[in-house]
Image 1 (cartoon, rainbow, N blue to C red):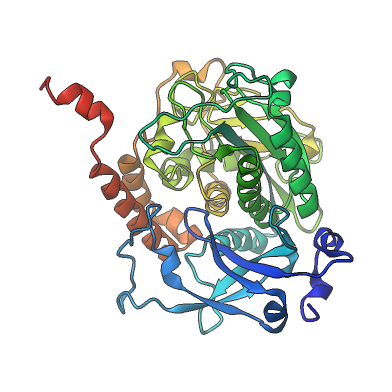
Image 2 (cartoon, rainbow, N blue to C red):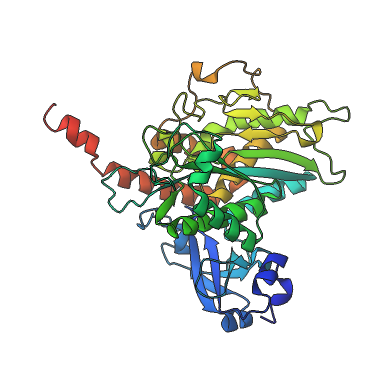
Length: 452
């Protein structure tokens, strides 16, 4: 890899030390967050500066159908130019040979970023912060379920069997015994993460049966989104090694809590390196309150990006560890926007709306976009909420159709994320929603067939 090896990150270089690289997986995230691309022999990757994929990969729904997202010239499937970002090169330690994965960025023939490529959407938002002299910092939390293999979609998803031979128990949040039940899977997650150079801040058992949470250290939004993108694949591969599935569905099991991707945000002044949410004496600044105001004002429309599927809205249920409104409070996990306990230098705002089923690039981009608009428009939040926010009224969309209605009218948000991205995303999501509405559910057959 003479052309690229000099740019390998330390973990990738260590993984290959004394070994011959066999293959490189050249990948990019599509709208759902699925890795698309090509696997090429290492010798070919060594010689190639880029490769091509059709831009139609961004027009596909989650079922593999096509949204009518073509531009003015119609649906002609232009080839994109995909260039490797060697800072993302990392091991694929579950493969049988010595393989690296490399995330690529998508450009058109005039070297312009493809506007609806999710990584480019996030880069666009980060550039808007940079233009103001700001550096956004995020820390995502990943919740997911380890479940028994499910080969029949008509069957309910069930928790996996633990080491004890009993199904994973629910309501065991933070239990070390529950974590130990998944010991072999977690061991592989740690081993894969270490081989890939990822730093896990901690793994805990969450409230659902077989539900785990992984916290990542805070850092650059694009780098952290890359890690979540990689982690989803890594965790799935670790589970498959032990005859079970890892799922990132927002609500895989009816009576259990859903899985979120909570996003913690802070913003640094590039020149001074100081957190702009804290003043010189450690107090909360206008920027801090404006950021919260931006989330409260613009998140209802952004929910369509953070909760992208019909299943996503099953998570927003009272008293099930997911928010039902956009109240904000200090150290209050019932509110949609939480201010964790911290020192002034680490002051941050946590968005608890995003589901783990969202594309990490798009979820983080949309959340940062709301905060950015709040600071640029100097929006003020409502009064701090004290008490149980589940006793209040819900003020976020409850179904995907309503969320898409709000999203389609959110022109200010579209300008930040990119109008062309907004256009393509809307068309694809509308197509998915129409596909879902064409399916008759078991509930309808059970209760309506003979009763109405």
